[in-house]
Structures are given as C-alpha cells and as structure tokens.
Length: 109
Image (cartoon, rainbow, N blue to C red; front, side):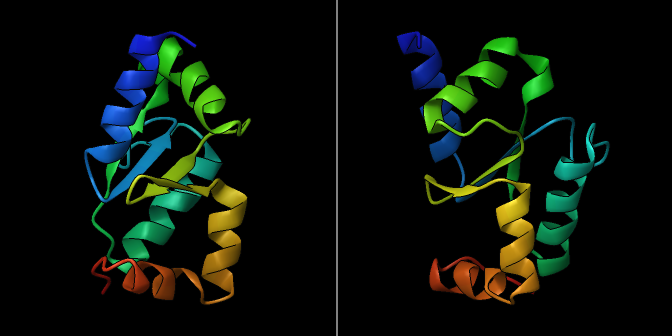
C-alpha cells in the first residue's frame, strides 16, 4: 500500500473518537450495511464522523488492506478497528455496544 494512502487513512482514523468508513453519507447511505451501522450509532446517540469510501477508490481499497478486513462499513473507536456491520449489529443486539462506548469514555444517550 502506498505510504501516502496509509498516512491519509491514519489521519482520518485518528481525527475523531468514532469514525465510520461507509458507502455514502449518514443522510444518504449507499448500502444497507452502512445504513444499519448509522442507525445503531444514531440510536445510541453517538457523535461520529464518516468517510465516504465511494468518493475515492484509493481509500476504498486502502482501508480494506489497512485492516485486513474485506468489507465496508468499518467502525473505528479511539483509533482501534472494532468491526463491520455484522459485529456492530451483534454487539448492539447483545447490549454490549453501549457499554463498550461508555467504557471508552464516549458519551451515549
């Protein structure tokens, strides 16, 4: 992977406590999985920033390589990769996600 793409991804991941790499935007998700994660984060009252991977193919392919995770969306909390839609949904359904955010010092509703 190119060094400048790695640096760009690192910059985006560290720019906010909660960062979601997704297809589309929170107001207009371009895939069902991205939409699910946005809905869960909104439901929990989490402040988060997003990166629309559809805006840049280098970011889209680079983030998959960066984490060695094949799918989008990807959620980062305090610069740590948490998982994709399946993991976030499972944590939410098991009532683990809200506590995870609280343990990370991130405000929820």
